[in-house]
Image (cartoon, rainbow, N blue to C red; front, side, top):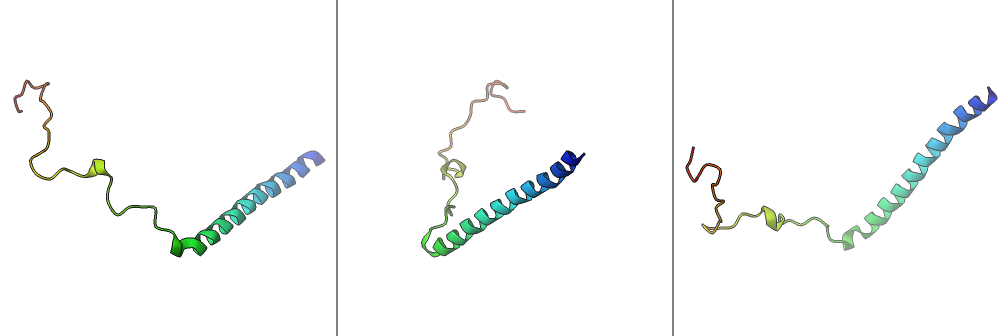
Length: 73
């Protein structure tokens, strides 16, 4: 019975210690980033990726209509 009580006390303490450690590491990482923030360019680009940009003009390749035999409808 004493074993279960000790287990019920030790597991939440260990769980809380893990979260506290993670919080400290994240806080240090954020502090380090904020110190360097004026010197680092943002990682996201203002331009969309090339595969999302539609070509300008009538230079767009049409897909063949195989399933309908070329007819619409």
